[in-house]
Length: 308
Image 1 (cartoon, rainbow, N blue to C red):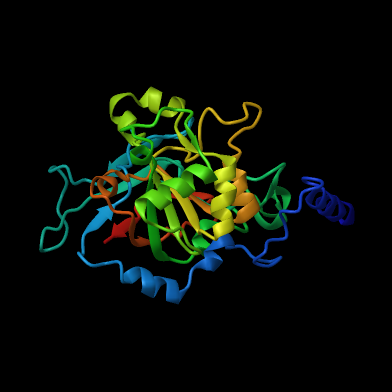
Image 2: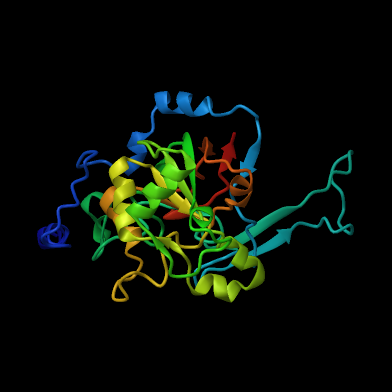
């Protein structure tokens, strides 16, 4: 037993030798990451952005045709004898239906928790997989522990800034492009914000799902580091991975994910439907998300709301 503990400690300490991304700046025992940047004061300020009472649902429909990284799938079975032939119950002749779902948590519009991607089996704040990952659920970093995310939302319309309805796959935007777009759109990204990018890519899904999943415009590593340095709590986009694909370095696999999640504790929001916000020219809004409390879950299907 002592040998196993020592081996775990050694693996944790040497998981990525020479790197200093843990312990987290939020504390060696922290499990929330950048959500520590949420505050009551920030929420009160964000609430003042609501002047029209208009709401925008940011999720796509969740179903068998939802965008999903293979082999993720969705299926539903409607149960109970309520097809018109069953015997009603009680004197009031009550009938009803129920449903059974068999679904991957990472399809459609979703939040990636801090246990989703790491570096060499080490995840946010130096947590090694051997310490917290179990096939019955995460023992730490599960999304059920996340507080409600209610804060200022910022939409950066990269498609408009770069003069295209739909940015081509492989188009990367980094700190220079993000700063320029924010400046042109008259917004400033601040600590505690949720930042969403509109690239037009979700429109590809409506025409050709295979093309949609084959690549995408998105965030580069430098852009991820820049946003993390500002103290944002989450980054999302109208694409299935948020980051640029094909990537900037063909030797790397989804490098933006561990940069945000593992190194900086910044959450990722995928397949956000930003089209209505972009069409209305909205760049600041109240962002509200009650994170589903599935115990031990790595990620979850979500439907956040933007309110202006």
